Length: 314
Image (cartoon, rainbow, N blue to C red; front, side):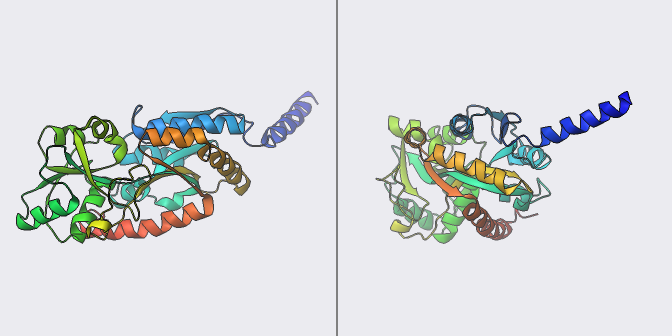
């Protein structure tokens, strides 16, 4: 009888535990695919702080860098789809899959919300003879294969942006891969002539006047960089924005997604988040779950084609 009562009590307790409404059961964890101190890490912590206040629950950031994001993606995809384990995802969900670093594509996750966009830029040293993207392209056309342009590594968003840019311009340059932390010093040190990079990594040098931005790779001028013309304005028809957002393991209940999405919306649309993003050289750009899902699917096909065209698709 005592054993039976104990078992009944355990069942009742377990049923009650399952009925605890989200997110009261415990802290939420956001996996960041890059090291602490990176722009991805800083922006994720801004988001986590706001979500904590909106949800009245701790939202923790855990860094799981490595393998172009594969380590973090694998970890989150393997977690229970209950909303307590999230990933700070980006365009890398497609590049890591098509490069063979993970065996599941974006379908392994449910989109929650897009949070930020970054506009890849073309940068040169302040003393460069090139004053515009048109100058660089003209020089590359006159001297094919003699201009060195750096990026953050094979298969990275900046690499694919570089490829798309100069293919659209119909010129040949030398593509020089560096680690994300080495690409800017490589330009300042004269090891490359130009680079394609995300602006958050360059903001300090641009403000100090050591680097000049020639173009943004966006459909329209970036509000954070209003004086920098787009590549399209300069005759090169290309547009490649980098985005960051939140995703959950596939199968996460829709009410949980909606709760997280609402908390993210309120955070991202707050003046504090907008100002913090601007200071970091990124743009707050909330997008709800269903639209974010569509964006990821549309872009995935584009990334697959581009990686296949340069021999990176496994």
